[in-house]
Image (cartoon, rainbow, N blue to C red):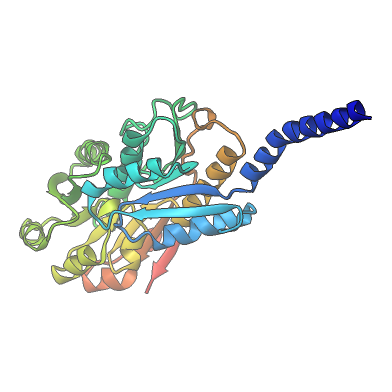
Length: 325
């Protein structure tokens, strides 16, 4: 009888022991995935966060139930990005979603193990975030907006808008790793079109009044604004000095600038959620090809054009995806 009880007891202990891994696995599966989000803070990340959440919701993720977003905003201070990226690593997030190039570079400096999703960046190859778009190999993947490459197309549009244009000023971000390929493409394509280029380097956290006075005095036909410098302050200074501002950020004409040629930001932000989903389901970031947009849109603020004395040619207006009146 005792031996039978002993057998039952031993069998029960063995059963519990065998069940522990399954219980642990179930507990782990029940834990919400921690998604770290790293943003510079300029331009405002509100639209990005909204679309990222909508993208995750469409894939079955619910905040507080199966995912938890841990968003860190550097408040337009690039010097804080490394510190915030390190915090996400210490918090052992499952994935880091990085909005724009400075955030992605900071995340890459912070970890070589945690998957990083670019959401998006301007030029993943040119900034060294990946060595191959088809097979990134490391812990970084996501979306590369190809913003440097389309700078040439933007210059062509400016030439079409104002055939007599002779020069373009460029407001470039001194703290952005994307700036080097961005400026290089502009200078090369401008030379092909016979346009002079003047580069004005700024730091987004510093006042820009004096820089804009200098830009206005340069009498450049257009001002090209780097996407990561899009802010209310910059657009207000554009209006104050009556500058024809263009960008690869579609927010610029919507905020009062003149023109933008770029891929849909909403689409790119939601595509980042697809990468997060695949990684959480076991995909290795290094085996997920980096995506580039296949469709670009042209937005023109007709009210701004009229205020600047510019007449948009009918042929150009007909190709515009969105006209702001």
